[in-house]
Amino acid sequence: MVTNEHPVGLLPLQKFWEISRQIHEFMTWTQVECPFEKDKKIQSYLLTAPIYSEEALFIASFESEGPENHMEKDSWKTLRTTLLNRA
Image (cartoon, rainbow, N blue to C red; front, side, top):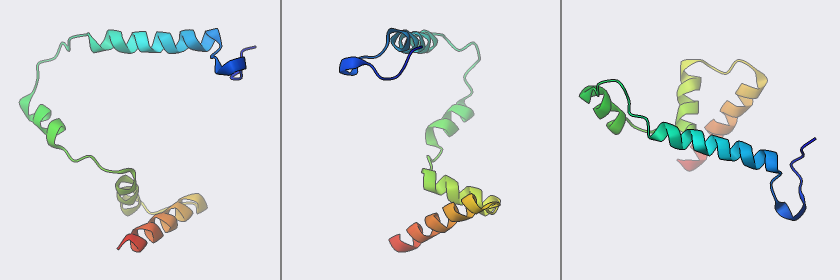
């Protein structure tokens, strides 16, 4: 059995190889040329579209569909309080 704990903070060999494999896959995919023609409108949108914070996405989600359970209601109350305190 492989555990996360190892003496002197070393990674177990199996975990090292898994991380290595994932990095190798990522590097391989970064070198693949996309077979589709570039669409200037889509490319422009992706380069200029706003990037929303996690809080902004949370707000948009709750504005679209209100909180449905106690956990969501608590999250909404906390977020609302945080935003009111900033103003």
